Image 1: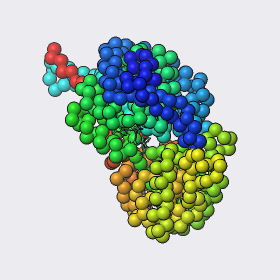
Image 2 (image 1 turned 60 degrees about the vertical axis):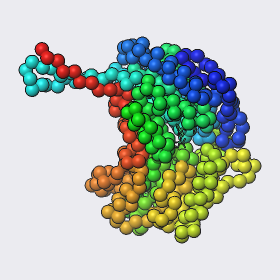
Image 3 (image 1 turned 120 degrees about the horizontal axis):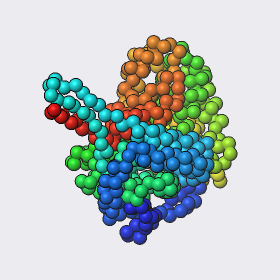
Image 4 (image 1 turned 135 degrees about the horizontal axis):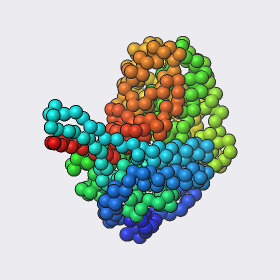
Length: 476
Ligand code: NAP
């Protein structure tokens, strides 16, 4: 069902589409397949609801988000199980994601109350300046399948806190997670029309309405750089505000003053995050030549030991890829790397057997001898392939690390404080983990530079993506 103006309704066309478990192919349920007409109705509902919602006090809006946080925290297990079934990540990772998703509800319940203005001294004695912030209006949101609940709350929570109303289109592969999230918001007391959900198997017409309707003043998109560019170009036609959280190609730098075993354990953990399907997963592991042996051996051992399977099975550390296309990309990148001289240290092929044949499973893979002419060095992999590139000195590795159009996450392992700061300053990425593979939190700004996007989510910055700044000059 779609959620429009506070009511769960079928699509105007009556069409539905199925959501499947990517590990088994099992149909988990069918959902309404929205088209243009439904998206128009959702935008109209959001527009109608805007006046009253934006007039509620920040404290009232905060209370709703706080209730939503409580509900999500209570339902962590239930939501995590649904997420594992629909998206495929192992249950432990799904629990972490629900916790991360709930963090945004709590964080922005608090930030709602901290939208401070400013007074600015004037050069004129008879003048005063006041800067104030007001909600932009209707915000449209498009989210990906890889983080199916937290990508929703990372957008919806700041928008509601700011006083905006929203229309959300989740990814086609994970509509059930979106429905569960919106039901929870409804239960928390979000008034009719404030949050509208349009699930669809065809994003084109929905995106078209979001971009074409003048009532929509803001588009927040998380997904591929390719689609993000199309959205930014169309949004420019009406000068709608945009936030874009796009693809990444994270470099992971390991200097020879670091502990190579510790660094390799970190690399294994972050590489296998969500089966490698996270925008902050490392895509190129740059290791200083003198420590490449212990680093590669530890990484190989770690990746070989991880058990692949259905995310609900105890002991499973790596789930399926989302679809056949993703598997084909792994195969293409490995074939290309091998043809150009790389060596496989672990994995390297599709997993087969009764447990794997109904899903899209790829063996966690370590490649050594990766060079800049290979696809894996350039393309976002979005899967469990760890390519090792050897380097000799700091200047050389910084140049290689920055040699990408992406600029989302990056990682540095070193025990030298000066080097840590130098490299953090020199890396052209929005997020830098120094001896740390978890440099994210609802409290810190998340986002990329270059072709990884525009704007920041989370932190105190996140709410400003949904606020217009106004200055008021007053003559006394
Ligand atoms: P995608 O193909 O760009 O899809 C993302 C969303 O956009 C989906 O809801 C999709 O709908 C929709 N969409 C596709 N074409 C559209 C169009 N023409 N108009 C309007 N909407 C359209 O990306 P994905 O494969 O789902 O997600 C993986 C990508 O997301 C990776 O590149 C990853 O790095 C990035 N990502 C970035 C972040 C971040 O915070 N920077 C976080 C997570 C993921 P359908 O599902 O119906 O196709």
